Image (cartoon, rainbow, N blue to C red; front, side, top):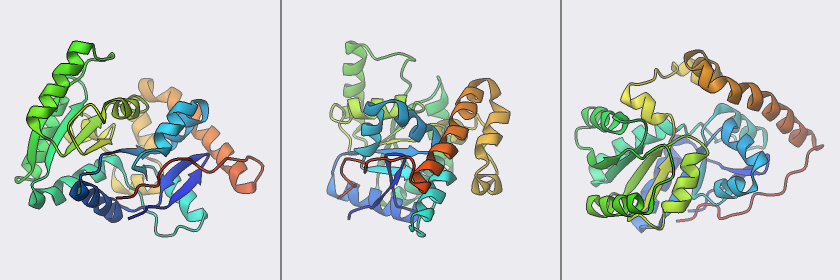
Length: 262
């Protein structure tokens, strides 16, 4: 299956909805084809404007899902009416629910101390047949060689099909690229705030706020000191840049990279 991409400021966002994303995951696991998946919104796209390496990471992902409503709107403006939001927390739940009947093994890597364990417990409570292969909380710095080997040994012993990574953007995307070939798993999926939401550490926005495109405001109110700089800087620039792309006075080359075959 080949997944189309839509060009959003030089980043190839996969033309998907939640159901087709789960289908893609199922096919990738069945074929045992290693990929990493990025869930990408305004923050990721704007990070890619300033860092060619990070843009390449997004464009070479197996999937680069439309994590925020602006990505969905951008796709629909370009004629892809089938696009829907593939939000990291929703993708995690949908894949966990589907995987119960397929004996899919899940490994949770990321978060502050205790978060991965709480996340695994809550998901296991919600989905009793979920197979939790293991959890790991990395330090807030690069792994040493010894830590890298210990992680590889842990993953090898746990035999996960999917490693869910919650380290925030762009750290989690770089981690996946650096470790996909080192770790014995099929898929790595960077889902950021899903760890905090599903562990119960941070309150998730109501659905109507998510659908309105105002989730950023809800999150800003909860964590103003951490998120103010990101939203004040990125949101107006994204609107301005995308308007320029749409009207043709800002040119972006077609995103490079594979379009997510399995």
